[in-house]
Amino acid sequence: MSFDSPEHKQAVVKTILQKHDAATNRRRFNALFATASINDAIEYYHLFQKMQAEKQGEDPDFEPLHIACVFTPPAEGNKDIRQLQEDLEQEKKTTK
Image (tube, rainbow, N blue to C red):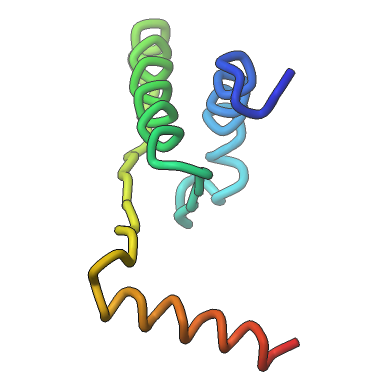
């Protein structure tokens, strides 16, 4: 099963929903989930919405996770973003 297959993504969401409360000490802590692309983030977002709605249908006491997406804009044409990316690259080189 490849990482970008629908089956893999569903398994990831299912596992997160099953283990999130224990891993975050009953939601006392937050979690961050990063994807390789904007399209993947959108797909995961929809999977979370769908699977959480199903869980709520099965268990009215289920409390859904709050899901938000943050997109990093491409540096094309934006000098500030390009500078940040260049600074980060330089930082990587000096900390090795």
